[in-house]
Length: 489
Ligand SMILES: Nc1ncnc2c1ncn2[C@@H]1O[C@H](COP(=O)(O)OP(=O)(O)OP(=O)(O)O)[C@@H](O)[C@H]1O
Ligand SMILES: [Mg+2]
Image 1 (tube, rainbow, N blue to C red):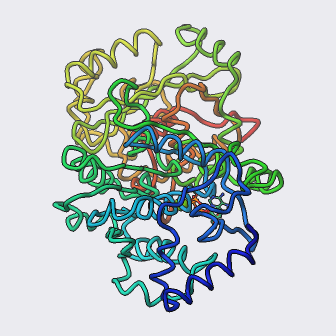
Image 2: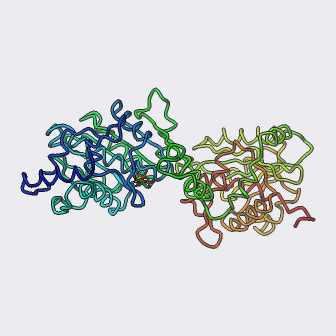
C-alpha cells in the first residue's frame, strides 16, 4: 500500500468518524507490530504510525529489533545492555503502544510504568516521545487528545506513566501492572538503582509484568554489572548484549562508527564496557601504554619473587561499608615500575588482613610498605611483627617521616594522606605520563580507577566520580618509593 493510498483510507475513515483522532486509534487495533518477513507490508502498526526516522529519513525495523521482539514473546523479564543510539528506546516505546492496541480492550484498566533517571524532564521526554508517535505517520496531529498530565498517556484504556527514579514511591501499590520499562537504568544514581529494581520486581508476584531493563553500560559494580554477573540459573532476566556491530550498516554507517572510535568513551558507549565517565587526570594513551602485553606480564610475574630487585607495597586501610581495604605491590625492573598485585578486601578482620600482608611481604620480599598514617593500629601491628621501632609519634615531625620515604631506615612508613594526597597524585601522573609504569593486564580495578580518576579542583581526587578509589590510593602510596631515574628526570 502506498502512503497516498493510506492517506485516502484515513481520510475516508475520518469522514465516517467525524474526523475524530480517537477514531483513528480504532485503526490501530489488532494490527500486527511489524511484518518481519515482508517489511514492505504496510498493514502494521509501525507503518500506520510512521516508521522511525533519523536525520529526516525513514528507516525499517532492523534484525536486532526482531531479536528483541522475539525475546519479548518468550520472556517476561529482559535485560538489554546496548550501544548508544541503536534505537532501543524508540523500539520499546513502540512495543508498549502496540501492546495497548493489540487486542480489543484486553489490557484496558491496566497500567504500564516507565522509570527514567532522576530528572522529571526525562520522564516527560519519554512520554512526549510516545505521544509523538500518534502525531506522525498517518495519525492526526491532535495534541489535545492527550489531556493527561505531562508524565502520563492513556492508550486504549491503558494508563502509562513515567516515574523519575527518585520518585518511586508513587509507583508502589499499583494494580494490574503489565509492563515496566526502566530506561538507561545503569545511569540511575547508585542509591536509586536497587530501589528501582526492587519496586519493579515486587510486581512479579502480583501481576507478572514484562520488566524491560535497558541501558548503555555505566560504571563498574553498578546495577548492570551486578545483573550481568548473576549466574545463568538464578538470574531473573533474559540478557541481551547489543554492541555497535549489531547496528553497523543499519542504524550506523561505517563512517559514523570510525568517527566514534576516536572518542575515549567509545568502549563504554558502543562496546558495552563498564567504564563510567572517563576521568580527567590521566590520558587514555598513557594508560594504554602502561598496560603490558601477555608476554611482558608473564615476565613480570616470573620476577615477582626474585630477591634481586626492590619492591614496595601501598596499603589503604578501611574497615567500614563504604570503602575497601586495598593493597598494591610494585617492583622496579628494567627502569620501569611494574605493578603486579592490586587487590581490595571488603570489611576484613584485622588479624586476617595483617597475616595476609605479612605473607605477601615475605613472598615478594617487599622492602617498603606505605600505609595511610591515619591508621596507627595497623602501622604499630606491622612494625611490631617485623621488629621495627614503632614509638615514632611525637618524636619525629611529619616532614621528617615524609623525608624517610625513600630511605632505608624504615620498612613500614606512615604517610600523612591528608597532607600529601596532592603530591602523590601529581607524582603518579608524572610517572604514568613519562611512561615509567607497567601494569599487569589482569589488574582491572586499578586500570579502571586510572581511566576514571577525576579531580574536582586543585588536584583533589573526586571519590564519587573515581571507581575503585581505594585501589588507586594504595597505588599512589606504593609509588612513594620511587624517584625518577637521574638521566630522565
Ligand atoms: N529501526 C529503528 N528503530 C528504532 N529507532 C530508529 C530506527 N531507525 C531510526 N531510528 C531513530 O533512531 C533514533 C535513536 O533512537 P533512540 O533514542 O531510541 O536510541 P537509543 O538506543 O535509546 O539510544 P540512547 O543511547 O541515546 O538512549 C531515533 O530518532 C529513532 O527514531
Ligand atoms: Mg535510549
